[in-house]
Image 1: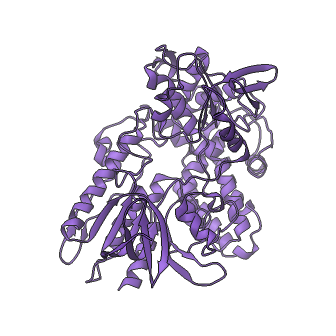
Image 2: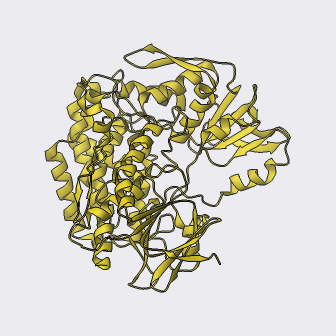
Image 3: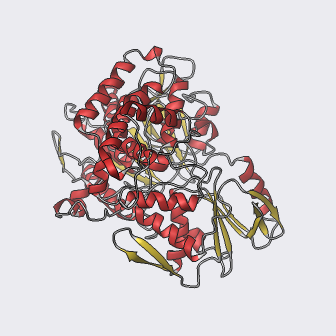
Length: 582
């Protein structure tokens, strides 16, 4: 057992200090206004960028973009925290910090999407501005290290870091983000075989993308396959091309159409593939187009009232119909209001509601107003880009996805901690995840870059939907519809879902193995109270460990949005902790 220094004792330990850890620290001291005694905090962060964490680290390449525009990046500012003996200064929201709020930007101007490292710089500056005050007051210790073990001991928590000391805290807040999970059968098979094949390389994670670009296996003439067809795939493809010296030239300022100019250092071919081959749809090009999909205050109030009425009879809710029933009329109204810019139809509002309901209930449902899943992925990509730029009639599914995006904050607030069954929580999360290919979509420029790479022949779309893949002496052999290709580098860009039962990182998995905690659903995260303390298996009590991050998915709805990190949830935890701490 690691030696514990008696001086290493604190009131609260915050493990993981990305955006959630930062927000939790701020909420903790904001909740201290009425207490004379102030808690001593120890913060653990494995990277050198507290506040930003690994996702927003400042040293990542410029090819990693946010999928939230500067206009839409609604991070709550920190208000001044005036305590009895010191004051924590206010800190602006991102838009004021970056200077965006001061600009007079016309609604027709193309939305800008910050680099992920730029948001990281904002977060680290925000962290530093509170940390330097707390350091001066001897209230905070910051440890750069990875926590690999916590144990409940003597009304507190013992915290151990890899290769370092042990610490003790009265309570712990787990603010950890993406955690590694067990590899699935396909990935396990590849990992077991790849070392036997000369020249073949397998990357089980897409980040950091620099590992892939700098790989000795990546040479001129390499064929690279990317497993997954989402945001991470775009980052990897951009890193392999633009990150290798290529460049994109804009051919049309209105549609953002581009062509790719190669450097000669990019792979010979990039082969993306996924189970269904369905592409993401881009966010609207600018504010003017996006405003089509914004519900009015009256519509939002009606939606909120409808959900609250349903939740008043939560024990009667057996399916997602209550959620779909609340939003479908609003989507129908908005689709009709868009007018001639939608796909032509002669449906009444009630008939539109029926189509919307049918598609939200059944992902296989087909209708002329909905982009068919049978359409080749490259054609779907072009169509969605045209809709996002106002150069093609809007389909009903595109409208559904982007109205859903605007209504998500209200939905997340009302459904988190709602007294509904675990099975229904799972169904709601699945529906929200399904719509993320619209609501969490990338900027238009990202998809125009993919289209330019397809047009140039660098991206090969022949194997996009569930190809047959076998390993041979050359690496991976793809076969689909009579087309074949061999690839020597495989990148898995499918990000791990927050399923606590599949997590293999020692910190959360040991809590499950010791039967202290359990998932809210076998495909979701752990069960917590509103103050984030995790509930004990088979008991009404809790353990002195709060789960603030993605692994609370299920109890919390909407754990992946950056804005949710700075919402009311950290305050629920902080207020609960201060009540126990007094």
